[in-house]
Image 1 (cartoon, rainbow, N blue to C red):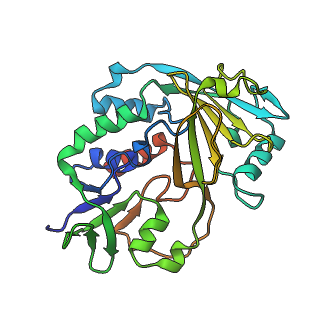
Image 2: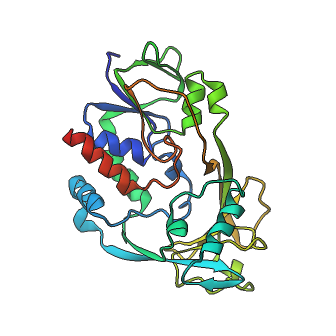
Length: 304
């Protein structure tokens, strides 16, 4: 393949970048990234902002989706509250990341109890993006990267993809290992997250039984094993647990383990050439990044 602009990763970050950069090709073995799980993993919403309005307009689907209010609850001191507190915020981050972890910006840390979002589901958004860039997706599993000679090595025998510029949207430590920087990759820490899909009756006999007024709830009480609950449109719930050794839960339907789940802040000193760009929450190792923020940065690259 001749030199070109490549994107590693087929999640929303990679597909969105490809949509707005028609001279870029996507290399992925799993379109959708983490959104290719068997059920929705926690609260995944497209915030209603000028950037996302432009996004859905450019995709040609703006008239198909309405604006809705997402309501957030906070469970602490064994009571479900409509607002958080600074003490609760710190307790939540200690529960999910440990006392030394740096809190990232989120609805929990910002104290929000609601926001406006589009009614589009993440699966639909991935499908729309995939259709728009389908002819520029290379189905291959990346196993190595040579940044000196600008080569990406695929999983198929002798599959080599040359690049002029590279946009990385997969988790940063995974890319570091592919590029041979093992000591730097090991500096990046994260906690696995287990998502468990349950029936509503799983909480009927607990103090968290009245959850239906909220789209999702943060839970900082340590005697409750999960740290976040999401109500899905089909009346099922998703419970999120820190770690990958979670016992079977009452009313459990299915589960999914994300090995790179809760990110832990890290200082790194490895410098990369300007033809390599890290783009997205996991590539930049910043859990606070939202889709509308990524879109704004894409628009800025179009204007520059």
